[in-house]
Length: 148
Image (cartoon, rainbow, N blue to C red; front, top):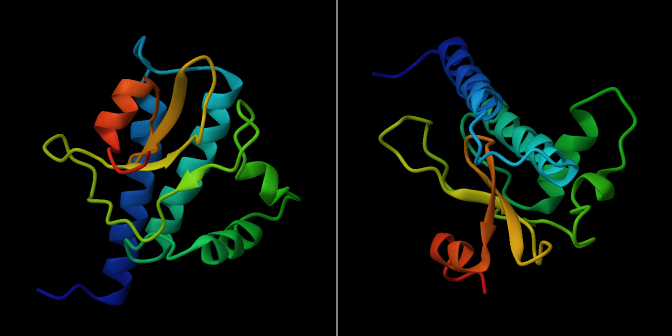
């Protein structure tokens, strides 16, 4: 069954809203709450919102994501600051063009953004739902064995 254009926009808008709710609703003890985590969480939500406004597709590259960030809000923002981890001072690694499934309990969400180095032997990683976790280097290697 093919969805009408309006239904399709509504569907992907709900996907973005679901990602926002899932990321905001997690309040367990394993959810990091520092400034670095909140910084990454906001970026992950922008990434998820991009998906919601682009029929489920993630940005194909940095240029496409930057253009979206520049146009997504009327407030002045420093895009370079948004794309840089405050903990290690390096640009976030963003997995452009990745397939992110619709959030559901049965489907594991991929890492979409992560810190290059992190701090104190841990890195923040963001998932397709917009949720952020702080992981050890060993956990990071299990999540993204090819990331190095």
